[in-house]
Length: 121
Length: 121
Picture 1 (cartoon, rainbow over the protein chains, first blue to last red):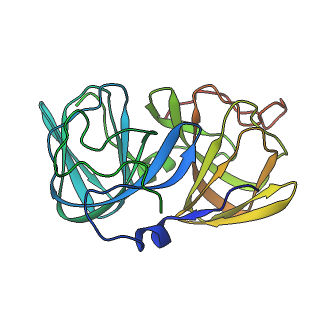
Picture 2 (tube, one colour):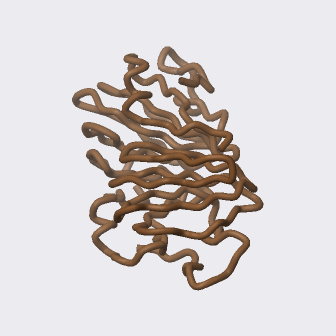
């Protein structure tokens, strides 16, 4: 009983900024992150890993070079490693991301949207 | 856009049996599984990996040798590797499990509750 349970709603009350994932749990070398998103993110990819998007509240889209996926509450999507994608949300959307520890939100790019890594709440 | 989106509610309509996890997604060498549970499971552990429980609907408990954790909808828990645990649900509960591909639900034990592995829906 080493760990504490994680209540997603409670964790989401602890921050308000967009595109800044907060780590809530770790399983082996993978992290579960919560993020609030709104508006357009940038095109990016993750060279070494798949990335899971799980919509907790609201809806979002993930644009790919060959199409777009619309996701609503209770839907998830696995972005394969190396595949360019651009997340977007018309209105505020709450998501969970699952990916290996150390992954940077903007992938191979560094700019003003690059979030602090390993930021726990 | 290689993958399809996964709708958790739709996937949960595709099976009714208890304690028989169905794989709905794969990220690198990890799998996302849905399970319906009711009643008592058995004491077991996973020697090589942590295991994540995420409650989609209803409530459940995880008993440890030194305590018990009660989980409701929207709550998650990371069972550390090697730690003995016994899941339980008073009433039908729907959960998501996240763990490496190849993990057996009853851990080191094989009995009538041991489910078919890598069972996709």
